[in-house]
Length: 294
Length: 317
Ligand SMILES: Nc1ncnc2c1ncn2[C@@H]1O[C@H](COP(=O)(O)OP(=O)(O)OP(=O)(O)O)[C@@H](O)[C@H]1O
Ligand SMILES: [Mg+2]
Image (spheres, chains in turn yellow, purple):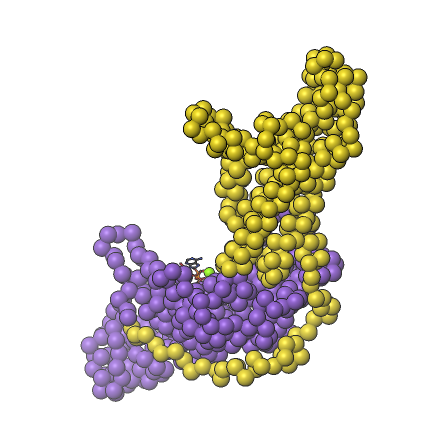
């Protein structure tokens, strides 16, 4: 048989054309479909269709609502059944919403990771990036749509729980919460949870693997507190206190004014901390997304 | 028009695409051929801006992919039919793509009709057969009615009717003045579809030629002759200056269009012939000869322990 054949004579290279202005000078087909200059709005509309058109979104959000509302009502019922005027005196009735959100946030984390990472699992990301070559725009659109969905669903659930609990406990001697308390326990918590989910979305984009991303996020949320619980020796005291104060559950409880420790973040601090974390993750995710192959 | 200029992609030590320079022109179907692992898919990913080239440049109608403000109306691509979220319906999959480029919603129904998926438009993609998924991928490529179309092994998984359909589709798209770039490992498939060929092996350009030129150069014609009196025939042929080589089954083969001369010669010498036929080596064989030096993943033809390298590419280059 013949050995390697030399490349055949090439058609004349087309380099000169490259200076030509885009459009016009290139021959070929012209579509009757109007050409639209795409912008972020298009990407957001597309991501909205994506997120609402898969059942996993509906499921994770339903479970979230079920957990937040279910646990909220259960705790409210237990507390009001066992409450005496003395034990409840001065306590904030909104603080009992904490438990449902603490458990339910896993769903938001899962949805956040899935929003980005699942596209890598299926290969859909290549289709997405072909349709929108600006990678930053794709990430921004996903972030906007997810944040809006997570915020609204959380706000509706926690507001409902807060109203029911405060009416359940209104006759039990508990303090009546101020407007500021209400705002923190509803809007504050919702912003915090939606930001946590956004962090998960960004982690998903960096890890590109659904199970991996979810594991990392759950570790981030739970590990510090669990570690702190077992740090009995006095020599680790400062580490333990730090982990307690800055663990996710402690920070979440700041919104309800029932922290594990007296010190640590107060007021709106957890939100600023989470914003900082999310911004850093956002920068990392963007740089990685731009530089890596899809 | 797709213009590749010294396009190179390295994955660590591995050079997947090596200084590829060629132009894919509008108005014709350009076949992109190469054995497994030759770098076809990698090249296509670089054209779409998904993988960053290590060196070199690629432009679509003069622009880099990232510069396209209306990507789907400029270029439509089918890379991997299974690159769809299984939980989403065909309709919603196409809808989210249409929205991302401001393409009118009505196009979704149109392309679904074109590919024949209207009946299953509301079904989840994970239930689709490979052929249906392939059709959905083609629908996505056609969505923006683009000037440039690129298909990575589009006939994979399609039934004969589907293959026939996509062949005609590609030809008609090219006839409308579009650029059509389609990859395959099957020369025979390309012979029926493509007007121009770009052949690569181990990332390097092996041929960039029109289909007709490729056929003219590579389709070896020969005459095959079989006789119960081989010695007499050999003598007669030798006298006439015709060189033959023995084929595996005892027949003789002569290069070129010599069947008529051999027949006349045999008649003159009164030699009995059992077979005399003019033959054309297939384009597939020509393609294999061309890429023989660059086939990376040789398979064994038989399961027996002694048959190493007995494949048709064995022992070359
Ligand atoms: N992401 C990657 N990382 C490392 N190596 C890669 C990667 N993608 C491709 N390669 C390597 O580059 C080479 C070219 O692969 P490519 O998929 O482009 O070939 P192909 O011509 O499409 O093959 P096939 O006909 O089998 O589809 C292969 O050897 C492959 O192993
Ligand atoms: Mg391939």
